[in-house]
Length: 351
Image 1: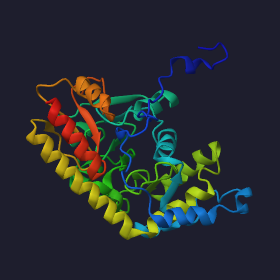
Image 2 (image 1 turned 90 degrees about the vertical axis):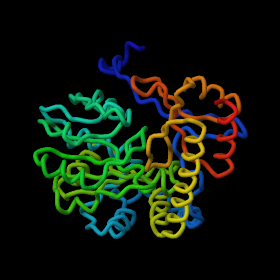
Image 3 (image 1 turned 180 degrees about the horizontal axis):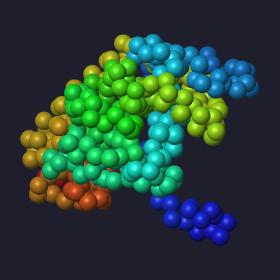
């Protein structure tokens, strides 16, 4: 620690991202990246955008990307906000929409960035326990709050909350913002974006990192009432008026344009997830029902960390969380068919 730090930095507990190992021939199933590369049209769009025009600043509001997202989801462009990955979008959400007198609410097992944002911005929060089978119980959220947020599907569990349950929450929580973090929704969920026209306190965030294979470009967005979007723009422009570079904008537009490639990749991931789930269940694993591009599983007779370590010895990297309630679970990203078969072969030998 340095005496030159601001006081709050000394106590700040930053988010720890998934490991990015650099070894050769690794089966990397720990950070929920898409096993398939971006659309060839994305690569071509980046190539065409890499001209001497990079000497100019990009459009500050995302320009064509914001418009194509609006068109794709059948909303007005005033209902769309874009940012440098959904993490930056969420950071602006916490500061612009959640900093109130009442604590915000989110699950006790969820995306671990949420408490980091709360600590960073001085926001009080309450963890709402998931049920014994790791489901979100909407009734637990019907209390005074300064905002509500949770991923759907949830992370790291992968469990999906049905849209009618989200609408029940919205009908009974009209005085604060409800944020649905849909990073994984394309792998098996129904988006809540359709509800944003009816509920002005609903904000939905998504990312192009997962289903559209653009984790390396950092593109995220939010959709909601124009009043909510204006708050995010005000906060964004106070930090960085140019959050997305020209190449990221070009890549994002091309990713939305190539709908056939998007559908093919997501369907392959879903099919592989179902195959891996069935195979692991046959080995004795208890697998939480997943609507994401990963599964969350434990073996009743095997220690999770020991399994993760043993897989690492075979150059297969999965995610282990040393946290209460989930210390015996592994989160395993769905890879290519070849990667998944290697995983299953090694697990079969270990259990």
